[in-house]
Image (tube, rainbow, N blue to C red; front, side):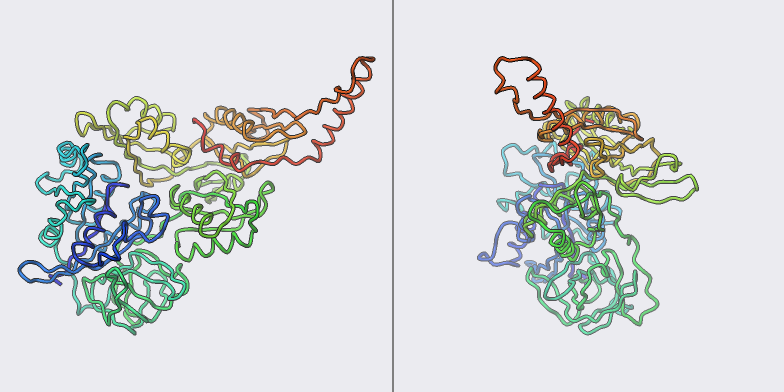
Length: 597
């Protein structure tokens, strides 16, 4: 065990984490020059295009020191985005150390700080890597200064490298061997293993990535999951090098994969503990929880897509992603669809893009919402995921909404605009620190619902792309919230309903009706768009009717002839309004996302 090192790579998005793992694969000859491609561990097209890691990956590297000692290095590559925070924490729990990658052209950013705290919670040894030193605009000195001030790591520990060119990368592996401690564990104790990731393979069933804490796991062993007592036989186990390499057994301190003909991924929960099926002395490992969906949105079949096709595609995706939840939902405006739950906005975007690209579907989505906690007048507490589920106001005693703790790092020049944005979004100021002469570290409590609506884009545009943002869920808090209905020709469209703060209702209602006026095409009859709260209209706009010039053939003659024709047209328009159907385009359902709130 003293020749094993388990480590992960953590970083803010786009700081070069995956490129660095490519170089480590090259140095240890884990992959031949012929098979080498950029972003080896990112297997999805989406991951390559966006330059983000969506799924955790693990690879076993072998390294022989100049003294002839052979070491096994288990690299666990983690997702970089806040939506997958829980998965990152479980991957870190499987390691003893971590490479903290900082982009020397950008310095320390919000996710760098959040990931550092996550690593320190798991008692990991951190090795700071200052990447991209080959670029002419790198600011190595400033990045080192920020690293010392914000994270509290000495500049002497940092390794300046360029993952792209390979400069300085050869110093990383000796540093891993020297600084990261070997795993602790007893191979003679009862089996205890941590599940840190899983996915579904259509030929082999669920593939589970595990870190063996104590004991040994052999091929053919019968195992059980402690969270749900499900039992399975291990058909195959092994390691990724990065190709799968089957082995006969895995021992304490090792990381590997196991396959046990498990057909349903929902049986395998990330963070769960595995032991032998007859074992009763093993206690679950700490930190296990089921990450709840934070963002909800309705997915409906678009033009040329059937309800059945959409259901099959979502079911197939849940095989690979157990954090995606869905249930059937019916909307008078959009027909039959599904209410889907996601870990965050990026997770929603990824699922939507995968449905559209991998399954060739046209989808209409509704504006995302969060989960609210309602206490009714009889004292019952329950949670709702869409405005349509909200009871009438006379039955509501209290509405609570989820709050997050946001970390924002911004250059001082943009501070005024960012503070104004946070104030508009009902932010509660916690603290503000200068981490260098120019950089400011802000901590705010924000309602999650306010972050959904174009917050990230606004933050980036106000700071010219320099500010960075990270958050974690904090708690539910009582707020004066009300339901706002959008009516099209006196008919409420449930897919357009919103839950809004009392003080902002009038502003949002006016903005939303004006925006929809621009998006709904003109019909042969007048379309009235209204925003209403408890049947009281607070904003109204009208899309004027397209009119045929019925007086074109009347040149001269008595005025009564013209009046007769206009009256006839008026009656026809009235009848058309009664039977006419307003086609609401997809953009209208997402109009709420682009408000200036």
